[in-house]
Image (cartoon, rainbow, N blue to C red; front, side, top):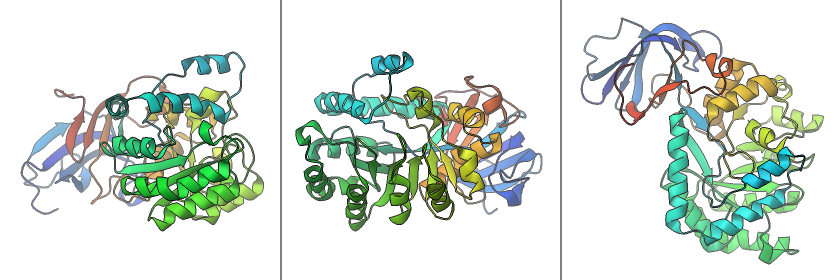
Length: 404
């Protein structure tokens, strides 16, 4: 560690359980250490070692964690935060026995089109702050509730105010004005709409599902995005068996998301590919659907991420700890696997190597739990365990805080 002292340095000492996600720094896949300390310099992890053995000269701010657990900030690689309107009645109807269909998205499209830029921006700001309070330090955010050239572009502008991980999802569903003309709408998405939106996006996504877009249409959208330098993502196999997972693998998409209904062939394809499978248990909870089989995917060798899928219709949550608890209870994952999926798994889904872990050189995004271990994330579901959040080595939440 070189030249640690100064205002850009922060020392976290007396850590009870430190999850590094670096096996070379500790035990098992999570690289867990007990009785540890961590030094951040200029926003990056500069040193990890035993508590009380911080290198001489490490000045700056000092945080005595008091034996609490410290984890990498959660990486939420699938959200839909740019929207207007309310779909609580739809949720209540499903609770009474109704079934989710993709067409419910159009209610949000209507409300989003009618909202002002200020209203959309305020919603994104509120939800990003809410996510931060539960430990999310990196998140992806999609468009997809505008479905016109101008509404998709302004949605991405609103998202880009808060994250570099912005995703163009013009191919969410076919809007009402193109009813019965899905190919015409895909042509618009792949030309004028992408031309306007690509400068504000890093990714392109498509909902490959009955009621949305078929395999050929989905592949066309992904290819058009790739020509403009955008990486691919796919909403795949959420509502039933279909071609989404295959399209994701064949086009080299970074992630196939949902993957609730997979054939044995799909599982083998995903397990042998570089495409990350992003599981969204909040959506299954909200839609009263079967949960994805995470165990089957992990055993096949797939890389699995967890994300919130925050959206107003089918998973209105930003809480990654709750998703971890759901995954451990319903998706067939161990707590360790779920924590990895919500941190380094999310980073892999975003093709990021600077977040999701606390190795030397990583961004110093940390979550301190008011608990001795990361196991409490599933052991105490629904409880606010996040005691503090740091981004780039700087305090990020709560807005004002004293010592632990």
